[in-house]
Length: 128
Image (tube, rainbow, N blue to C red; front, side, top):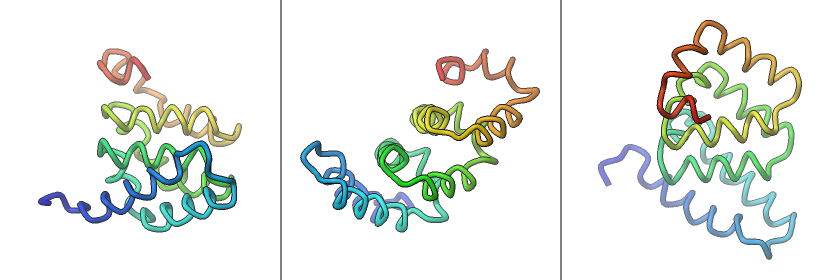
């Protein structure tokens, strides 16, 4: 309970359990994803580093609409290099790269400029 976003993490975990089920229809899933993204708005960077909420954000990126995905990418763009070195956030970065538009991919590659060698030597960064 000492974590600053403890209550938010609990709420997001409940939403995540509902949205990740295979038997949820598209309408309900999109509502759950939109609600989760609304709760996380402005806190994406802090959330991406946590074990539980990084998975929630990754699932939201997977199922959200393109404008919502763009908003998450814009919010996390300055931090993508840092997130590439975090244990749980690296999976979110992979998902963002996989679903990125050509413009977003170019922005991500340009943010890595000059940092590739240090990223390759990093235990987690090299795997991503």
